[in-house]
Amino acid sequence: MLDPTAGHGSSSRTYRVLLGKQNLVEEEAGSVAVAVEKMIVHEKWNSFLIVNDIALLKLAEHVENSDTIQPACLPDPDALLAQDYPCYITGWGRLWTNGPISDNLQQALLPVVDHETCTKRDWWGSTVRATMVCAGGDGVVSGCNGDSGGPLNCQNAKGWEVHGIVSFGSGLGCNTAKKPTVFTRVSAYNSWITEKMNQN
Image 1 (cartoon, one colour):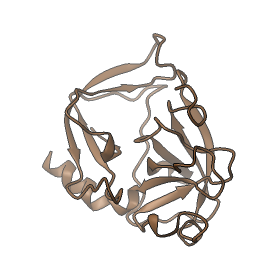
Image 2 (tube, one colour):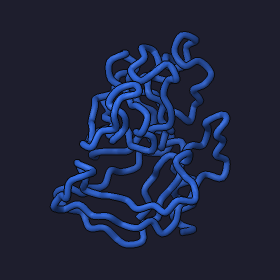
Image 3 (tube, helix red, strand yellow):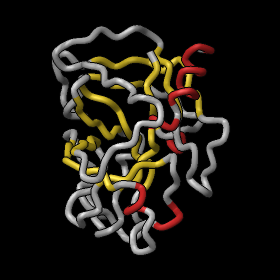
Image 4 (tube, helix red, strand yellow):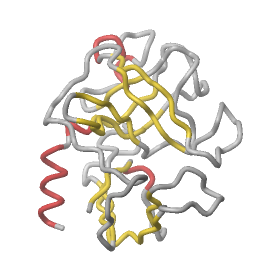
């Protein structure tokens, strides 16, 4: 089993993946902690340009689906979502700029901002590349520090798909208008993901 995450969260640390968790400090029935056998960071990850911000985690053991553990699929290769497509960000990041980290998993509706809008000069401009997807930007709801590596999940007729991986937000603070949360666009990396899964 390989889970996508942001490349910039990688280091020489020992990792484990928690599945079926809502609260990080409480014991929860049905939650599972699994060791990470291997981390595969994109070979062309560039921390200065924030490109290829993706990694895969190979879990040390198989995990069974349950009421609290369900997979989300990969989107079709090069799939692009329309302006305002409803997607959801989840994470345990800060509740607001410089605020506390949340013990409880947070979830928020973040509508997609299409590439044409997100790359306008008064939005993100040329910082956002075609391999990224933007969501939010209303100045009210966004990802925040600590959400990096988390998913942007979107539902369609086939079910839930992971369309994005939290990459970065505004240095001006979370919830900054016209500075939506920027995600690695998973559909730009289908072939890379498949190649690494086949090799590992």
